[in-house]
Image 1 (tube, rainbow, N blue to C red):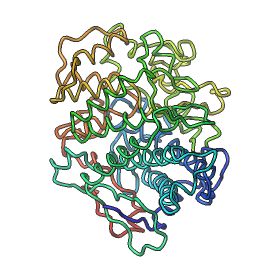
Image 2 (image 1 turned 120 degrees about the vertical axis):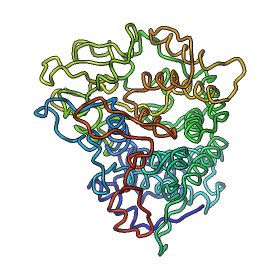
Image 3 (image 1 turned 90 degrees about the vertical axis):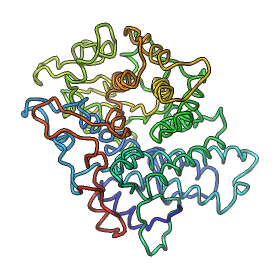
Image 4 (image 1 turned 30 degrees about the horizontal axis):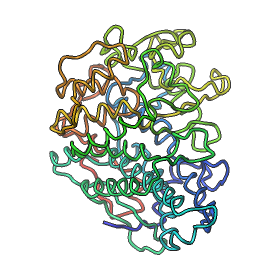
Length: 499
């Protein structure tokens, strides 16, 4: 269902979240609604700018990933109340409300509005209006594909936060999702209501399938620090695999995972290199799509970004839980432990060298790139959104649920990953084995909470006595509150159960 978005919704959503200046053209990572879209150069800059908000602290710049790890008990706040700053109290104690919830809504719709502006301009003028001796029709189609990828990602990520998964929506009999916005209408007199879960997933899939049909297989965005920081055909296909998995379209999930696995542009990291890849300036090997972290991005949260939230020399509100770290077997590089500053790039979990945090373990997936002196100034990390290991895991889960791929088995896919991590080979690949391997491999990348949430019976029993009640399969927290400010400007939004 196509809907228009009344501009006050975006303005209120975005500017209530942050006072950052959205109207800068430079650096390229910022988006300007006033940017001229009359030629290819203007379109190209507008699309480049639309990636910027993904690095905000409300999205991949910290909260979307780290708060999900906290809710799932992969992460924990430090035991010493003198040490942690209190920033991650809500996901730890599950005290979410409409006044205190995940702030993705405004940034998600800002990105959607930005790419819709580009798509509408191309549709209005026609592709041929932009074609010249130096610009081909395929050049324009590549930009359209990037826009569709970003629109799909924004709708999908917001659906994961503010609505039940397709399976849980049926279990709790509440199917409201988020508004689908395909056009920004300045003259609209009515605010949009929420679409259903099935409608949102159908739109996300439709956008990605159209993007796949438009994107040149060899296309990479130029003049950016990392080619993995922008949409590509493999990124589109990888996201399709994930979305199909959430929608429990098992064969499609397996087929799209296989497309990426068979792409020789990517390879699994070995056990020897696994600990060192997380501090790279630009992703390689497994990385399919990442959010680039740098001071030049006005949306980067600096001290509140993932590098400092998971560093005892930063705000350090997000330590690794023993519930997670105790799961790893001896020899599995993913559970290797050492001391921060001494073992950076050699192990995956480190203690504080000064022991000021009481011996807590900290993930090294956001160890920082070494931009400046990380002891006194903000350091930066890229945040990996899509990588090859997930494709093996997606395919394994799909195969366990009835999909078929010639010459492939779920057990072989799991053991392919484990062989590259120094872990012992499995002899069984049932649903529990797949779920555990996902938790081990993708920890601190924002998956485990959503993995539990996308299954009808997924639940969490907290082992930390400081935490509140367990999260059962029908808990209100699987669909977090839409921010109160949105209800203040849009009377057409329904409320999630319990909020």
